[in-house]
Length: 120
Image (cartoon, rainbow, N blue to C red; front, top):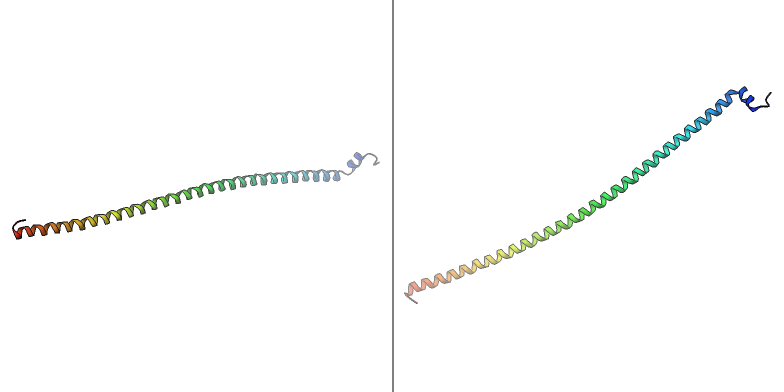
């Protein structure tokens, strides 16, 4: 008789095996999806950390580049100032040479006149 459900399961063992197999498969699928979810969460976390690290590194590089550009401008400005100072010094020295040559000619002419005239 089929009054007791256990007797029924005993009479139809294939059905019980199928249910257990379906439950086991469901558990395995659940475990698989849980593992996939965990891997995706870990991947997202690593991606986020990498993105933050790269953003920080980019900011550091940007700051270094700005400082390098500023330093370059300072050096170029300094070198231009030195060039202008040297040009001014050259102009001054050239003028001094001209003045000395004129003074030399004047002194020479005076000496020649003294020699020619025979005295002061």
